[in-house]
Image (cartoon, rainbow, N blue to C red; front, side, top):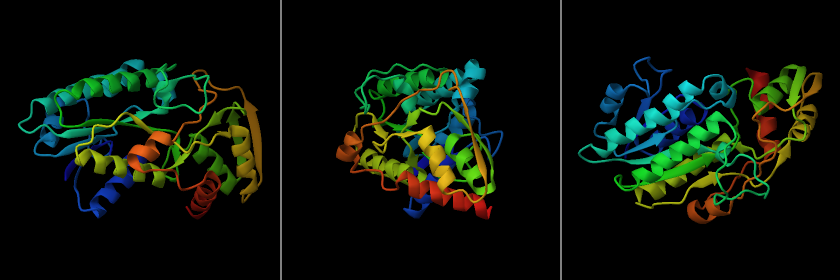
Amino acid sequence: MRILVTGSQGLIGCRLCVELVSLGHSVREFDLRISPKQDICDDKALSVYLDSIDGVIHLAAVSRVAEAENDPVRCRTVNEIALANMLHIMKHSTSPPWIIFASSREVYGFQETQPVSETAPLRPINVYGMSKRNGERLIQEARTTLPVANIIRFSNVYGAVEDHADRVIPHFAHVAARGGRITIFGGQTQLDFVHLEDAVRGVISMLNRTIAGSRLEPIHLVSGKGTTLRDLAGLAQRYSRKPLLPVYKDANPGQIGHFVGDPTRAARLLDWTSHIDLETGFSQLVSSYSIT
């Protein structure tokens, strides 16, 4: 397949592109970190990169909750308007390609029933989550004109030292390796963490179904296991190489306090389950920070 990967230099994109090439696919990368000319908001640049491809894996986005809250206009421009423009270009191409759209567990917002399944109502509570919900609506509408348009939702992916240093697991693992203060925003906050290798494997599984023509319901990649930030801090202390000091603060505004996903649909439709448990993945990341 000739595949365009937008956001190819991000946490998931980097590893995904390597895997796609290893599987024999022809990968066309698109990311501002490669060139200022590769701007997802530039229709002309997109048109060039969308020419003569079989499909798109769309990862490009304003993907940080805090960043989206600070600049909601930019978030909407990148996550919604640019997506709508890209879909318009795709629909009117000679041979419309398929698309896999990367969404987020943020689309669920607060859910009383846990674990959360993909059929739960979408009630995002922050700008980023709203932009992803609206993006999903655009993808659903595009199903009438594109060969296949599938949605995959990620949940707290971790597992690389190149990740944003202020994200919770990279922050905890870095401090465990180097020593210092761990800042914990909301000790009872419970999240569902998925290792990067598992996430990439899930995308490949969806890719194979998409290439085969399967029109899937939205699928989230989740472990089905919740971990509180207090327990994660305990894990950091267990694997710490140098002294660390936990400092507890109130949860950030707009932070979802409890999310555990239901992996049933992913297992049924993608034959996918999370393989790398949190303790193993976290300890490996601490070791990686110790080396760098």
